[in-house]
Length: 151
Ligand code: ZN
Image (tube, rainbow, N blue to C red; front, side, top):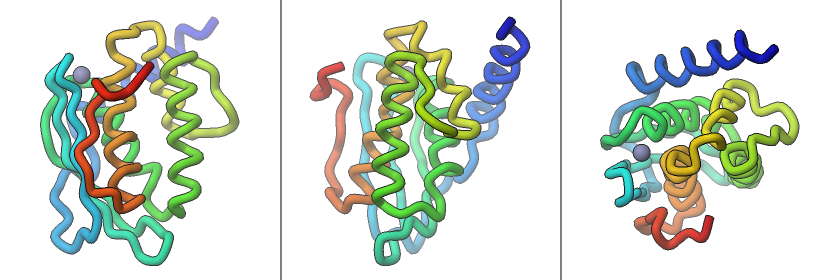
């Protein structure tokens, strides 16, 4: 019964991986962080312009598989205009979503990432940009790697 929805989500993932949104360096970014997933070869830099505790702008550059790129693209659309606390909250929801497939509340288009939990090897790809984005907006400015994560 969820076939139509699954197709819709797959199309959304494909669309975002082919034409990633906010796929650019932000010239006036005041926060950056890098994320690498050596297992898959995903490598991204996240750029954020944070004003007070609001994420005003967010963009990314780099390369990787379709899942990581789509996840990064969806992330930039979802985090823009959010507070840092909201970003953390959304990170936790997305983490649950991609590891268990359970949707906790309304996450909008990010629900498209739910299918990832069926492919354990892809979970790190999907969550990588989120680790990097969180490191960026929290001002940690560090390189995050999926290999230091216990999943
Ligand atoms: Zn990947």
